[in-house]
Amino acid sequence: MFRGKSGKLIKILWHDGLGMSLYAKRLERGRFLWPSSADAVVTITPAQLGYLLEGIDWRMPQQTWRPQAAG
Image (tube, rainbow, N blue to C red; front, side, top):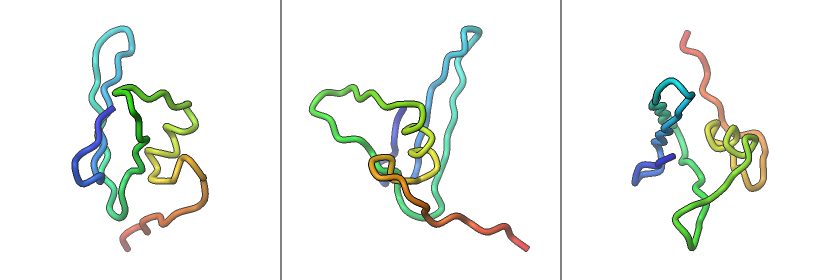
């Protein structure tokens, strides 16, 4: 998993046993909260990953701003 310098873009490399996939997500508002680490490796749970991808503070989950449908 990689985060852009501005913190608005995140990219994930995923291997499913058959091949590699690259997933990217950009936030319209706010930034991805990134774990700080003395090492280069950080382990997070699947639930924390879900929060991170939704732009929710995975350390203290709570409802955040969500974009409204255009209409």
